[in-house]
Length: 285
Image (cartoon, rainbow, N blue to C red; front, side):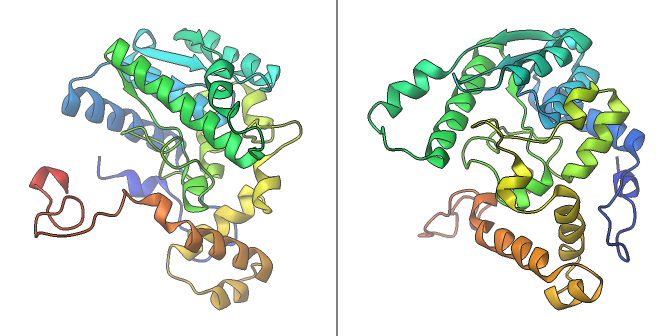
């Protein structure tokens, strides 16, 4: 499995998002899922929250290849304001793969809390929905003797565009080191239905909401900047390479201000065996 870095194209002198070898990446991620679930945990079933978006669709396709369609359980978890089109798009994946599927509406659970917080804004309401969905996925995993599989991509994780202790909570994530533009490449290779690949990404929290509108930058532009930023180039160097100063500043600000979301809770160290802060057993590395 050491060949995966070769699946990512060279980005040292490019202002475009990094590309991938989709076939090599597919083989690597299928092997990763088999190793993490079956070999390491003895679990042969996966639970995926199927939103109707490309990330969860790609995750479902990878799980079906790794575990077999009969061992993949997809859950559609709409709120009352969710788009009907999202449910329909998720159904395209279910029908194509032949995986198990169930729809559980979360409106009652979410509103059961929000009735006490009627003034909650869209951000807070969205966070409640995301955490409620994760509660369902973990409970269904316990019921099915399965493991919930994460669907968050590298772009959203770096920009902090996810709900902490929700979207990024599952213990295994095959897409976490793939930029959004790379997920689209992988989706086309895997045969994900075109409506999911071509539509504008959206958290589906309100009408006409899009991820790129929220972020203030396209995924293509963000991915190109992030790829260079992760190589250590300064903002000034990125601007010299042709990136817009405003875009560089936006990406840098989001990455720096959301660093805490990419870590486990910080533990106050009182001993030299503080878990995750100091002491790690060999298996924890």
